[in-house]
Image: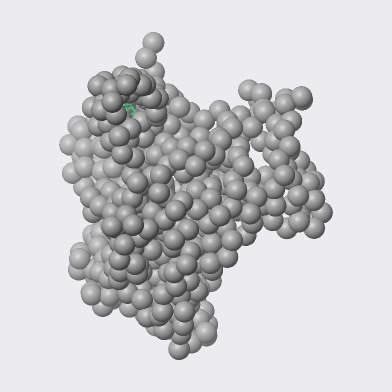
Length: 123
Length: 421
Ligand SMILES: Cc1cc2nc3c(=O)[nH]c(=O)nc-3n(C[C@H](O)[C@H](O)[C@H](O)COP(=O)(O)OP(=O)(O)OC[C@H]3O[C@@H](n4cnc5c(N)ncnc54)[C@H](O)[C@@H]3O)c2cc1C
Ligand code: SF4
């Protein structure tokens, strides 16, 4: 099956309007890009768009109410909202250390959620 | 009175990078004064990723980027006083500060680096008619509430202004379960990064309305809705284009301004365009031994360049403290020419300067296919082609010492855009 998709390159402020032709889900051509980066971006973005998710979790017994966390790798874009929903049921207990894994496998993606900063215990 | 070779006001990324580089350049008596209870500045609330691509070739979150510098400062053992507010700076470099622990105290500094960052443009600066009900926040305040306090300020949101903080918050509020109806931007282009428009708005189907503004806010106690209208080329609302949105929250993302009350009171001369100090190529202000870097100097969009600039300020302060880098040589003013709003620095000393210096500037509009030209007496010194430039992304051009020394009669250097005919 042939299809055509339009997207905007995020490589630089030019924001080239890219047209991608696909055949049976595989990219056959990219047009509209001014440089090579646009081509690379389009191929990745059309077939498997992924993002790093960053959010916060409540901390119990911490000197601050929340800790910022991120996924250790990129998760599929389509799962972003499911992932944050899954995160909402989590709480961590102080002390938390930057780099600490707070969830081994987020929402079945196989990707871990890690703390990006320290939170000390409340004195 | 206490003495200290180098006093750094502000412990954000600028202050920390300046401290590290001054130490590496040999200064051992340094103190960083920070009014907050922790180091890292505004980065602590910027939990999204995308920091450090230039510096660390890695995509870090704000707290991680700050963490790298906090770690360096700790390892070197540079003292940082937290919960310490700098109240006053005198032209003789006496710093007056206050903390709960020490009360009011004064330090005679050998050199001072200003690194107080910036703040958001106040709501009062925006002329929106109507009452001032609850539910109107600056995007940065909302960012602090959500990310630091764990409190979602509203559920039905309209964002005015498409600066990066507004875009980032549109995504953040959506992820937290709010409905962001629209982002309205007064200008015909967004001041935010393309990356943020795609990943913060398009990813979640949030519309961006360019050339639109808020003309009315409804609700007396709490925001109940806003009215948007399209604006004409003179930024005046066009009758008949009004659209109504029900919402309980309006986020304003309308730009940042350097925080210079302290500098102004000390007699530091400010730049009319940037609202930051006027500095020469060593990032020194008109007060000898007082340097500035980071957002207090001019608003940056990438923290990587803040760190780079701050490191240069640290080295200059070290040179000043060791008795070098005195003024008195000839300095050549830098002028912002066609299409350029300002340059930092605003002057260079061709004898004192390093082999090469970075001149950062912002352009006045979106232009395609231009050349950035730095020239002197009509002679181009550097010419650089740019496919596109936009006010939202800081530009730079590098000047070489050898080139300037070859122009002994230079009266000024102009940085300008050359448009294609
Ligand atoms: C709300 C907001 C969001 C931002 N988001 C991003 C982003 O997503 N990505 C990005 O690259 N950039 C972002 N920026 C720009 C960001 O500020 C810079 O990248 C970087 O943090 C600037 O570093 P700085 O050290 O100059 O300023 P800051 O990080 O603001 O640090 C200044 C420090 O000085 C302290 N200070 C100020 N006055 C005094 C005083 N009188 N006494 C003692 N201490 C004082 C402050 O408490 C603060 O810790 C944002 C800016 C703001 C305001
Ligand atoms: S294709 Fe190249 S020029 Fe066009 S937006 Fe992407 S990076 Fe920029």
